[in-house]
Length: 246
Image (cartoon, rainbow, N blue to C red):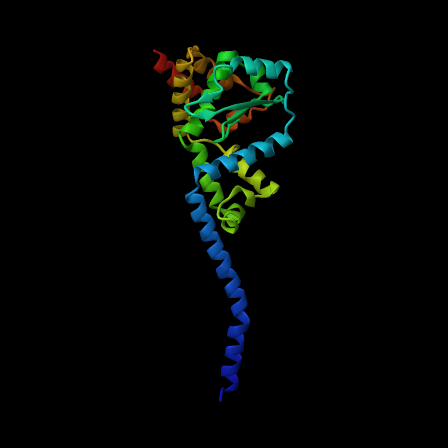
């Protein structure tokens, strides 16, 4: 026979068991999500990138085909429809913001504020720089880190890391962590080095890397520069590029 105290202890244990089981399942799901993020396949990276591009495109005012911005971008990228096996697709977001980004699926988006500020070769430098982040693995690493934390980790665990698991709000969080977070200085240097090679291979003026960074360094007040908030130290980077040219 159980004593009254033993019965109470046993009842307390069983009443707590469901809550413990739920927490355990959540922890297992989190571990699964982190493992899935760490071992993302190329197909998963491409799928997540396509969804991020579609999410951002859906929120942007895109310059239509035949507009001055779209025509200019098509002309200056005529020889850059792919890069080392990465198929590239381009759009212009019509906004005064000065920014650009590339995703791992080859989606490249330039903001009209940046196009207003820069020459064709300076824009080509920016494109090469953004592609450099992709080829150097920076975009993939950010995606892995984002999918291994918080709600995104839980979503990855629920569906083995596949992009289909992400809601629109989760895609917005993914964009924040992959596209809108600041790059490290070492990542910036790698991307700048890639951009120099990108310009050289296509016969464009490498001095455009220096002049573009100098323009960004001087940028102030009148325009919002998200590119400066995510790509630090343009003055130091311009000097580094100038030394390479010398």
